[in-house]
Length: 568
Image (cartoon, rainbow, N blue to C red; front, side, top):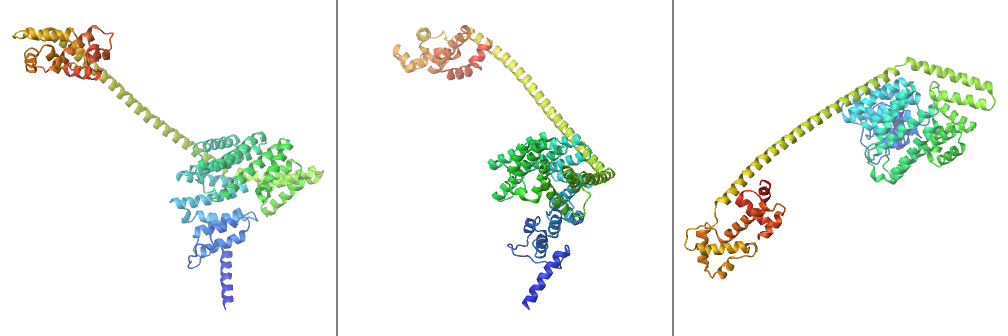
């Protein structure tokens, strides 16, 4: 009974895998360690698509994946499998997804879903060289990326559009777009996302250069890919890990670098072979063979052009046969046309001219049909639409920049007016202060001439005159340590008597104030009569420190010694 039940469950799972998108009535969540996850399905899709489909459907059945995740994974398996890809099925699923609520792009998550589907769609149409649909979905993806602020991904697609423009006959514009993308991605702080986008865009340009037989220009670009990867691996800590394309495990990151590095060596090998530099071509080919990518179907397909240049026709034909087997009945595409051309050249090289002509005739027919389809398609209209939007965006950016410049100019003019107003105000204030100081200097000088330091109407006038004259003529005040006790001892006076003399003949000043008054009078004479002397030296010569001199002078006369001297 148990065996029958287990067999029934297994058959149910297999039926679900075969029927694709039939939904069960309900799903149950599975333990987190189950093998039925979308990640496991995607790890298998390139080498074991049948098993990957089972896992994707089972992940949905046990509650580990949403309907969108299941359907998109199935489309990925069909469209990107290395073994007999079923791109028509992939496109069918993608078109249904683009009409579903899960890709309406009205939220960040649904926008990401739509962008993922558009990426798969554009990949398929690029492989098929269906330029009409290729350009149509690239334009939508570029607009959507910009709407949601994904500028790096928008630049990736601009590089893709550069190739589309190239194949639409606008070669110069195609190269221009690619160069703009590469220049933009080279700016800014180190970033894995921009590095990956730059490498992808550089590969696009290399393919275009190869198409135009500009092989000498390929070599430095391929070498720059290698150099950038070497620098990244040596300074990985400087790079922002902002790309979902970067594997989380260090060993896988090394393989990520080797994948691109091996392709760069393949590009160099083809360029050298096309330039008849067979020594360098074989050297690059030997390096390419050291990478795991060289043993994959995609790697062999990539290097097939080198075998052609080296005259290794058997190796080339083996790869072309494998490609043709994968194409199945799809014989109206660039890959099949290239196979026909290869067979024509191989037959001619072997002396089979009749066979060579037959293959070449078939090649011309396929190419003619493809050219006719391109002319009848709306690809040019989509491309023109994209270019018009780019032009409008550039105009909008230019207007925004002009607006910013106007704002900056207005701010600068306002600042300049503020500075000028402040300068004029300060100049007027300085002028008013100067006039005030000049008037104050005249007043001080007039007061000095009109007032006498000593009164002449007391009985002890002679004694005070004797003391005052001695202090002034003997410059006793110049001693910073000059004290009242010196006067008391020299003239045998009591403190009370000296205070009475100061009160009567020095306008009631205390002894320190009386001495400071004498010092300041002498300072005014020095400032007026000795302009060559510094204020510091004058202050020291009269018994003041420079700081105290400035303070005492300003307190008595309302201006500093410097201001007094300037307004004489």
